[in-house]
Image 1 (cartoon, helix red, strand yellow):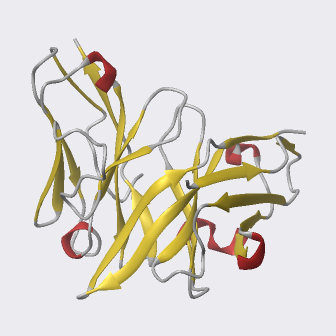
Image 2: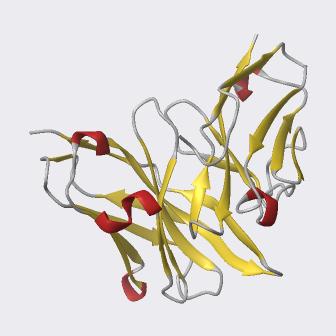
Length: 126
Length: 110
């Protein structure tokens, strides 16, 4: 049974750094093609892809947020951590982590997330 | 502004069919696989379609995916009130080296 759970502060102040942890079970991040992604969704708005870390420790970031994001994994603890610096009220959103199948084959990339956490709402306000 | 373009909303009566388009470019949809998600109000997204046209176990065959060139389409037949949700397409962008989502489409059952 695959589960993922996001944890972190519900409220951060502007300019602070947000640290979110995704704790998962039911799969291993050392399995080939296995990845964990972070996606966020501002209230009433669309999903926004943030970052992904792969089984082989490759890391991928949203171009627009790349300078502010760091993703890392602790395979032994089944955790993935996302850090976002210089938080701003516009970063208020529900943050999701998801198990993702991500790899390239035949020159084409696969990316699909079959299990998601329930999401954690992060508000940015002074 | 999303890299992938979806219509903001579509609607149809119960039992009818709706299609949702997702338009991109050769850098994303044209050369990578597309997935589709359903997000019911207040819940996390659920994977409906992967690899352009494959359904995960448990997803009814009323949901279908297709792709032609740089556009993908999600079809829902036999529309039910429980299908009222937001639907998102996703793919990999080879230029951005990142995942990208469409802006989402709200399905309303009249």
